[in-house]
Image: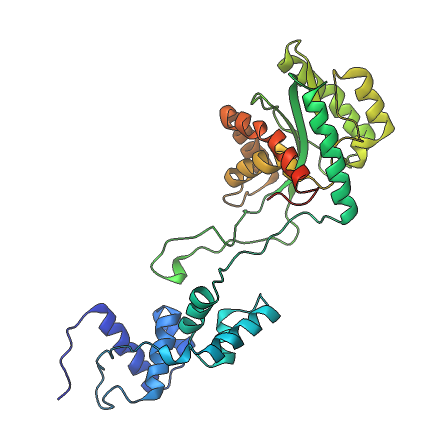
Length: 351
């Protein structure tokens, strides 16, 4: 007599999967129809194929007590897994399991317990050639020396530009949606050529934030355009914020910034600035706007798609107005430590 099994949701799910398999449905069809977990469906399908653990006439098979697959974690299997991982560290556990002829659970145990591997997300960083590393290393020495001497005690103003689009910003690894079914998860649409705005901002080492400056649509940032922004927007705001105190202005190595026209004007009209021979190339990891401010702003302004550019601009202005000054000041205070980390890394990556 078939053993009586207490009815529960898990039992009903297993029974439904078995009946679907008997009816000729594939695991993919079952997953799509019932929205059951992939691993559950394939595990039951594998055991169903063995056909030695249920009574064929019974529509409600009893759950089989699982037996650990100890015999499959042999030295030979472990060595083969090691060789495959060394050959291609990006190989998926599913592919390893398929080639080795064992379950994904066993492969995961081999990788984590026997070989002591952990799964990490690939690093995406600014490209750094050997020449760029040498220049980063040398220029960070110059900046550190400046911070210890002529720039010591000055308010530091950091500047940068960024392009925002009207599309929602999604982190494919961290952004999640809690739902009972896959169909309840909203689709985040992406446009091929989204409308965008080009923003420039300046922040101070004391936590002050300049209201964002928006360049005109389609406006090319030439040295003349940038110089006009320096004269009309940036310098007046820095002078007002500094209130007569000595200050230092930073900008990156964009062509418009390093032109003789701009460099000469800054030399004649700004209290102090780091010339084009100071700022390290390919170094968004050193600018507080890059490693802190833009991320904070974009996380809030691009949670969802904007219907037009005006909506996006309004959201950006609102977020800049509410940015927490104490947290910004803390982020700016990490600037010198980051310079020292680049020097320690001999111009290499620090994050």
